[in-house]
Length: 146
Image (tube, rainbow, N blue to C red):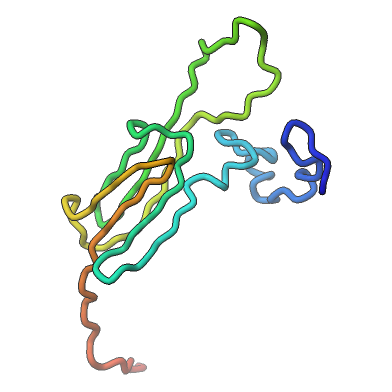
């Protein structure tokens, strides 16, 4: 077990992503070091549909937006923390809750918005998209060389 201070592993700095470090100085400006854990998604294939389960812990239903345009399904969520939120009994010595926006897009093909169903419960957004028949490929797969 590694020692920790305020929930942060003391050895996190040794294992940082060098690409992220070069861009953000070792810390994602919106979400901090744990930002890559946002919007984890599972995609399940069912007989008649595809089901997406997107983790959005800490977001309220009205902070989440789902848009379908140009064959892409885009899920976005934004959270703002009030700067006027003050503790009358003391001052904050550490704040780990994030504020900002995140989004994720998926190519879904020719799906209409009315064919998609969405449900948000316990921090998980569940979307159901109908399966479309795959377009038939040409019968010949031979490629001529010139």
